[in-house]
Length: 317
Image (cartoon, rainbow, N blue to C red; front, top):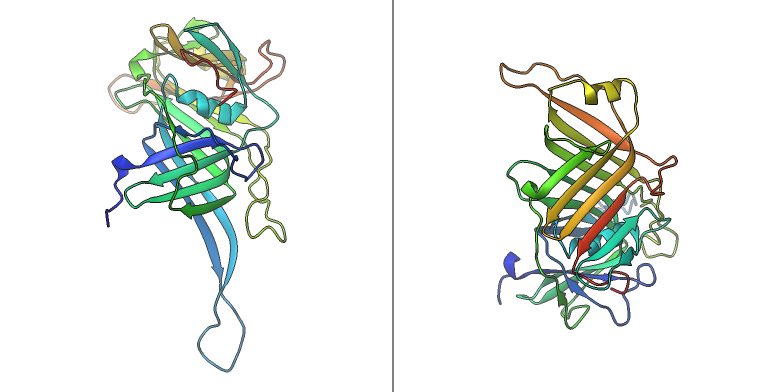
């Protein structure tokens, strides 16, 4: 028997038409990933039944929790599938390379089938009813540019055959930290050393019902909260003054590779007041947390993600 090896493993992704149900003829995608740690947990409930013995009665089984984290490269093609999982179908324009895909906040998120594949065994661990609950990334410095997803799901099955007989391979065309930039209020910020973005989709994971077999019956969406941090050299008081005065501004995080790009635009943001402090004799930094919101921005969304690449359509995936 062959031992399962990480480099031989795959993460397959497909979209569900009905929550928690694998599609009859799935279009499966072999997703680039650095880590996939989806798992199922089920509580064992100790029994208090007395039966004239010291030995405990067999415990009962409780509800199941499908959850975990996935780390993926921020790339030109594959990342669009994760954007669709967060925001639904994009508006796509263009008749050839490059295509422009615009994702905005919508009322609901599509549910996914995510399958951790171990072909060495073989074993195929399929998780149904999955949605992205949280998303985050940090850029700046010499680290690999990756994104983190926290996943909630409904149920898991393990089979000796995969969900889809063949998977569409996604070309790995990564963006890098040095291709990133940041704008505040429409002007480039050359003093920022690090920036981060976090999205909490507010999924309600407490949806267990009588007769559901201990599985989540749905994952209703809650309020979407967008936040992050920018760390900058403390050269002037412009950003600090914005925070002190609660002045609304905008932020744009962008990565560019030739004619292709990925952009996160937050048209309305407000900075939290902090102090730079003095940590050493060296240069002083200031870290400013921010929150994005929507009041009356022309984009109609607290965050707008724009992916420009050579992939024709994510809506039919």
